[in-house]
Image (cartoon, rainbow, N blue to C red; front, side, top):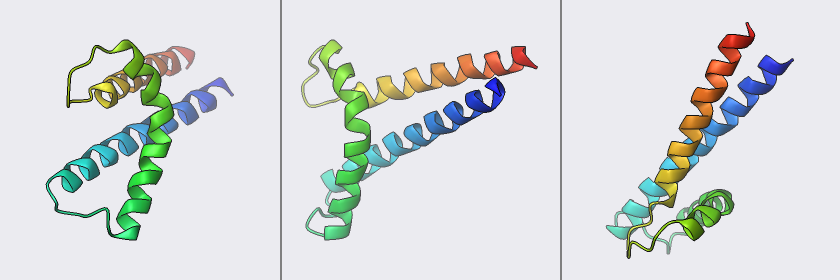
Length: 96
């Protein structure tokens, strides 16, 4: 039962890593005018993705020093989720 719970948490962590990467790529594409927020579908996807990751990155931003235009909180979130995945993977192996 615990192994299944660990696998579910690992899946959710992988999904959040993917969402953070999608948000980053979309932000770059918007910055370089490859895609435009005037397109309602792009705007809806971008706002939805940011609404999902904002509750996780907001507390990280409080502890991070101000670096100007560059926001490192998504990178810190990915690193934290990867550390969680490593811990859960080792815990799962030790449970078997």
